[in-house]
Image (cartoon, rainbow, N blue to C red; front, side, top):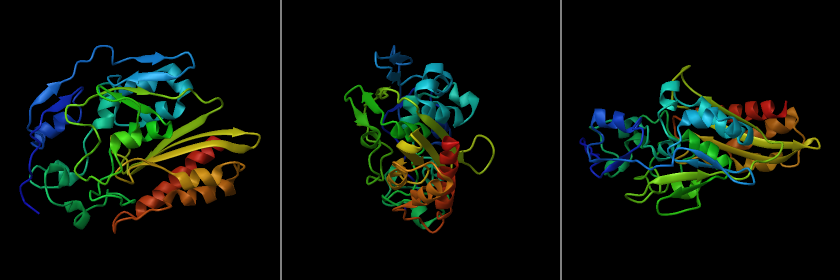
Length: 305
């Protein structure tokens, strides 16, 4: 591994710049900056079927506090309200949250090379990866940093850019197989809006994160869970997790175990154990699977109450 990193030199977009400003200060980003100004991309539009289209420049605070968003998409609103600090939520945009760069301390160190800075390997894999992935699906072991992507994955939302439309969250962010990239945006491509599906009648949703201190901390593990309980059983379930893989994950095994089952303590406990299905933790990250199990169990218990 080279001791000197290859710094970012390509032009970077700036909206609120809550992440970019830190990378400029430390010297990780040194290229030209392109300030984005896209009129009309900071609001929320509603269609006849009650579905929302959220402009990429809408702030996280707007998403968290909008009454209609909270009623139609309670898991999305809860996720927005739970991330970062009030100061950051009032500046940071939903588009910027989706497109932000890795929080890995090796990437953020301007003197260390890594895959995302033109290096040949991931130094975290053989180094200190305490905050790394528990589902090792790519050459880079840093979890994706976007909390909003977790909620949007749970809602099957799609993203429109200035070049493409209808991108699912997996299509936007990739599968983690390219360790050099944090997302699948092409050079010069900008996110314009996020399209939500029509609201689901009777939905209950929660968001929760496990963190190492009380405030202003990046999640070790985070989960957004949605469900509809009808006739004494789970008739619909969507659960997405972040902090555990290079991209947010749907917990398919847990969803399947809950489908059509009564919302009992035993059903929830058994389903929560399946949240780790397919996990391949690193030597230092097995603890994340315990956190994941606990978060899923807690959220489902709250939803069922």
